[in-house]
Length: 422
Image (cartoon, rainbow, N blue to C red; front, side, top):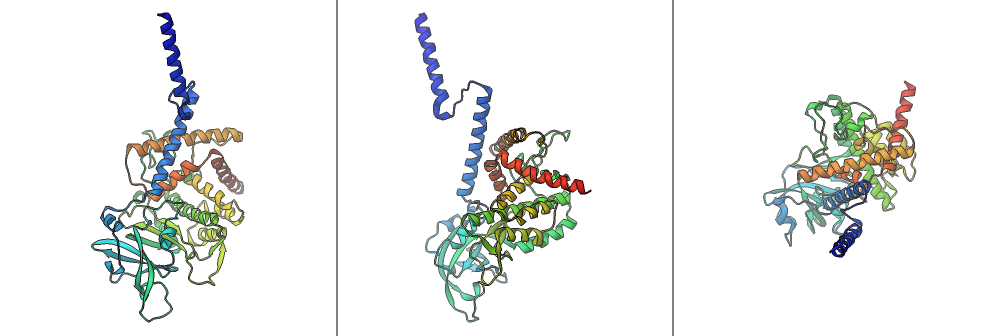
């Protein structure tokens, strides 16, 4: 009997060991540290899966799903709205239109050599996220020449064109968005302006005492490392988020060995879903889109610097980013991206004193907790995520303690310089 009991214990021990070794993802660990590490890894992987699904599964509005499955589409199946002015961006013209009774936006290009030319560029956006700008469908057909951008003749002819069908969008240039923000920064009333994402726990979680809750839950809060929650800090968050998307777009071009883009940034378009006025504008950098071959070109850093200093309102982060971009080094765009993400979403309550190893350990703990908090919010409430949420998820999934520490040192160094001059 005793031998059978010992044998049973031995078998249970073997089963437990097998459980510990299974694919490195055990649910039984020898130490609390092992359990903590397993949970951290699982949270990170779960967030990465959410981001991957978000980027690879564009959402088609229910009313337009039949359009996505339609075959043999013709241009005459759509009605361009009377009196609506086309939005022209380089070689592409965007028209408000109807498909039966459903509102859509048509992106027309006279180049029909490659289907997916417009949509492919639009979907590159901020690194792959593309639910609003992702074309529902594309096809080639004959289009009246006057509906195409900047045709050299006044004679009305039919020309072969690529037609990309998108949901109805509100479109703006970077210059027009900058002008709106410059005006808004002077009259902005924080009480009626919402700049935040959709994920629960990311939009203003504070405890009743207003003290020690998660402090990185409002989109502007780490601009309180430039510490104020005023109208100007919200404007700073808007500028930071536009610049983050622009830098992401420039990094996409850089990855394709494209080193220059128009200084006017005529190849940049921002869009909002007409059905979601509160969402942040989604920025897209189009490739090979300039009409004038003689248009002045500049390096990617120079163009980003021009957007920051000439087109967008000055904020407290402007001089920090301007200094990084003016250096025009290979890593300048990556460094600017890290600073922007830290300013938008990094911690404001983690002590950044002590040795580098201690700082990085504190930042890693914060990152682990933030990933768990966001994952909990996603599981608890199903919401349609905005481009702001997508970029936030990209930060949580791809950022590291070292990257945040380097960004924090840049911000802190600038603050110390400012303090010494006062």
